[in-house]
Length: 110
Length: 111
Image 1: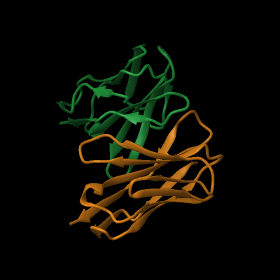
Image 2: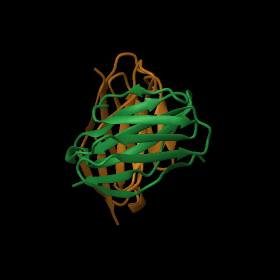
Image 3: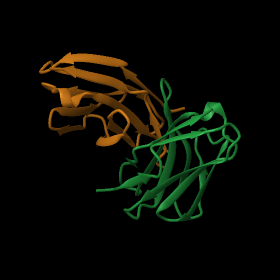
């Protein structure tokens, strides 16, 4: 059974204080690992897809990396507007059936 | 940009009522999905559809059904609402080679 575990559950940072979010996964035949951002009262917003170990993707202050067992979302010099819940999901062999983690709630204080 | 519109942001229904949640997309995507999101449990897949009139059960289909009569519209039906179906319901769409795009959700409360 595919599983995704995200840590920490919540993270509080000062503006400019870089950190990383972790997504550990077990999946039979990884077809993709996805990162989403979710603001309160809104649906998840797509950030990245990673397909194979060693792959990295960047967008503004965010950088996602992938190994065979986990993915990291690195946040460099975060700003208050980066505050959100970050969700990780994996797609195994099934038809676009994503398995989601429970997310990391990030709060960036000015 | 993909637009996925869910008909209601908030909905309050009574136990035993039949409830319809509607989702409409404007990008001609083949695939549509219904998830529910609960604290501590994350997003869980209820049903999905890869074509008009086609539907497949997800991980937690019990107590739900779906309808897809037109490509752009995917409805989730709670045949007889119960309090344990109080949740945030999220619709998503995709093509075979694109990530899922989500609507803003319907927060359903069953009293």
